[in-house]
Each structure stands twice: as C-alpha cells, then as structure tokens.
Amino acid sequence: MPSLEWKAEYSVGNELIDSQHRGLLELIVRLEQALTGDSSRGQDLDLLTELVRYANNHFSTEEDLMRECGYPYCWEHEKSHLEFREDLARLAGIIMQGDQDGWARLLEFTHSWWQGHILGLDRDLFRYYHQHRESRLADGA
Ligand SMILES: [Fe+2]
Ligand SMILES: [Fe+2]
Image (cartoon, rainbow, N blue to C red; front, top):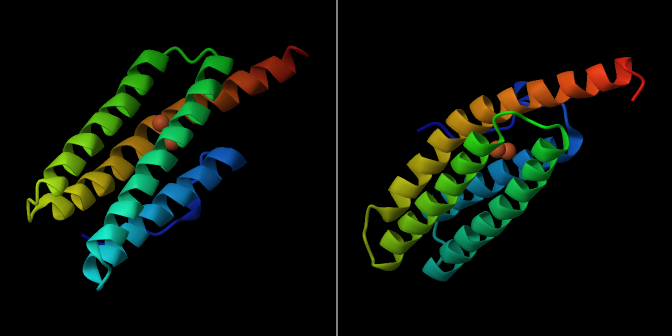
C-alpha cells in the first residue's frame, strides 16, 4: 500500500476544503507512520481519536456547503459520511478488542476511502458547487 501524499490534482478548488483534506491526509499518514514506528498504543489511539474528530468537523463543513448550493445528491453524500463514521467506529471497536489485524484493516480502509470519497464523491460535489456559483454570478445574484 503506497503512502498517501498530497498532489495538486487532489484540489477541489475550495481553499477551506482543500486545507481540511490536507489535514485528513496528514493524519492518515501520521497514523500510518505511528503504526509502523515505535509509538505506544496510547499514542496510536490518540491519533485515531484525532482522526475521528477531524473527519467529523470536516463533514459538517462540507455538509453546510452542500446545503448552501442546493446540491441534489446531498442525501447520498451525507450517507457516505455517515458510513465512514460507522466503519471507523466499528474498526476502532475491533482494535480495542485487541484484534491484531485491526490497525492494518483501518489503514486499508482510510486509503480506499481517500480514493473513493475524496477523489470521487467530493470532486462531484465541488464540480456542482462551482457551477452553481458561476451561474449565480452570471445571474448577478
Ligand atoms: Fe471531503
Ligand atoms: Fe465528502
């Protein structure tokens, strides 16, 4: 699994969202480094908690923007955020029970979520968001 690294092509063209996505990526990478390094279990769990908090904050920012532009696929997008929360909570539970594969599964999950959600659904959302803004500007709104 190659390590994730921010690339210009990841940008969705919104400064706030890009900086939050960078923050998420950074946390995923820090978690990955912690797990392959000699960090303590407590430090690993702190990072996981930070990732959950950060993601929740990011989701609410994004959901506000979705409503603001009347995104027609709000429900599907919010459902995907909810599924992320649920999957992460489930994996955290597995880790807390001492399952040896828990962390590896968690990393795999965050990587595939990055590809599928950030580079998929979020891009679709911001394509709509920018079109919506442009048409409002053209209408003089
Ligand atoms: Fe996002
Ligand atoms: Fe999203």
